[in-house]
Length: 479
Ligand code: GLU
Image 1 (cartoon, protein in one colour):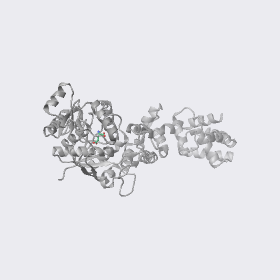
Image 2: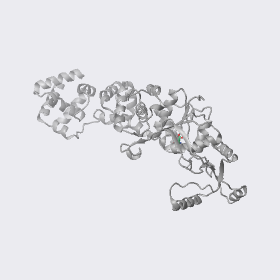
Image 3: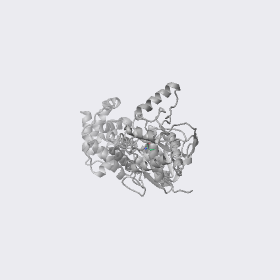
């Protein structure tokens, strides 16, 4: 059977998009684009206590920011909608009834407290995994009517056949779950809402999903889902479970490792193209061994065979390096466009476009994420330089530096405008006049203009500041 590729990203809108989910979305999208298939976005919002519209909106916003476009789903529509599970509840009911009619599922009237007591009891008897006893499997219609009369709203449980379940995972290979790995599980809760395993199967089938690509925290759900497909007599999609992402201490990536949701990375000025590249490489590698890969190449080279079967460590240093590479690839126009919001948010009044462009380009080499521009351009936007670095303070106060500053100020009297060339000429004259050379000549001026001992090209920077501001800054430090 040669089914066309249809994959889905199916987030539950219970918070911001976590970096692990982002990676799942990216791999699905890359595979869809690689194979000319469809990428479907489905919102799994049947957990009504935890799902919110705000989360759904933020997920869509995050996907837009990443530039992952979907072919069917919210905002887009499509032939297999609706794409929000809360709008498909009648479908789940319909299919649950079908399983009841074929005695593959049954009503369960056990209350939460009865189930808990049964679990406690079984634990006390011998511990281990405790499954549902199957108590309601064979209730007679009369017993069911009696329970209903008591006002108990039943759940619907799937009757798990006594058999082992195997499937071939595209990354993990053949996986087998022995008989009795789990008991009869709930497919529709007593309130009428489907459980994740049930709704996902119904939707993946009705939406013609060919490949289910998701995090390997779902591996233990897959045998349950496979049994459901078989109970309906439906084709089973291919499964691919991607290994989880670990923090640098090799524990599961979580909030205590720092930023873990996509919006936090966006707020710091990571670029979507860098995030896509970086997260793709967390589970996959190019045959060429190259690491900086355009989206076009990621799409072209995607293959399940190159997905790693071991957990990946989220290395922030590497992400920062890679983001820096992408920042340096931005042309000046793009650089301004993407950085301006960060500067405005810092309260800076932006200069004309050409000056801003020159300023940002000057610092482009040294920035790993755009938010760093706020601090790195503080000398330009601030009123005054505040020296905080002890070595810089000492240097600015040395005898040689004093000589340099006063000589420099005198030279400024002789020039009208200020270009990198004029600045260099001035420095030459200061050298001749004071006898101070090299680092001792340049560093005091750098400190006066930026407050730091390292930074971008000084003549260019001085030209950007302009003669009058340079004069003020040097005066400020000697006075
Ligand atoms: N809503 C599930 C989740 O966010 C989807 C899992 C799946 O892809 O089947 O984890």
